[in-house]
Length: 228
Ligand code: ADP
Ligand code: ADP
Image 1 (cartoon, rainbow, N blue to C red):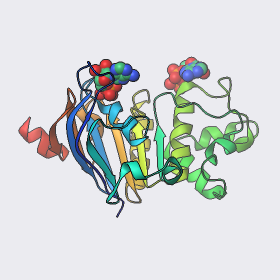
Image 2: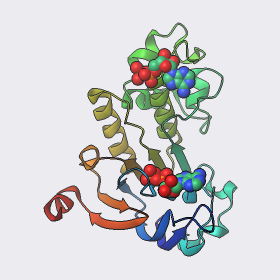
Image 3: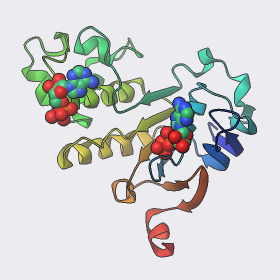
């Protein structure tokens, strides 16, 4: 069972700083969509940084599959975890190379399914060389590159998909499509999204409200609205 557990995790960026995470405990089940919401500075991105091993907790523990996270090497985690942030860079190369970056053997139909999930299939068809077009800032807008980054993560089909505010700059229709892509991926593995507002993560299975480095509430959307 690929369950991820944080227990009483404390982290600060410098010894005399206020903790960015101040005793965070949470469980991310092996399947389903967990959303972390909270105001700017709450510590949402810091949680992702720990899960990507950019930093280690100064106190508390993280466990993946019942094993201390410190025992997992970056090699172990590669292929299991995918991460997309607001400005995830594309690699210099073609659309196909970007989509198959982490999963070279993906078949063509899976690539198009991932493009559909981010509403980029039409756009990809109209590019001069389709999937073999070089994708640069001149062929794709920032929002389009963002969607390709999400599609690439969906193609990788990771056990844990971390999405940091990836729908913030998308229009409503595209956001709804990406939400559907997230829902589908959440039936295969764990998806954790970061969002500013509760309204954008209505269909998450679990919502964790973070404030000033502490978990303020955990529950479904309806449960949280009822207690608000
Ligand atoms: P959120 O993602 O919820 O906006 P962050 O995890 O980015 O919050 O930040 C949590 C706290 O840690 C904030 O007080 C922020 O200023 C601080 N912080 C974030 N990144 C750094 C950093 N690289 N160096 C120092 N402090 C940081
Ligand atoms: P969209 O309208 O699809 O949301 P954006 O508003 O994100 O597009 O981007 C507008 C323009 O700014 C685009 O032409 C894009 O090429 C450029 N742009 C956005 N983000 C970046 C970036 N990180 N690097 C280079 N150019 C960018």
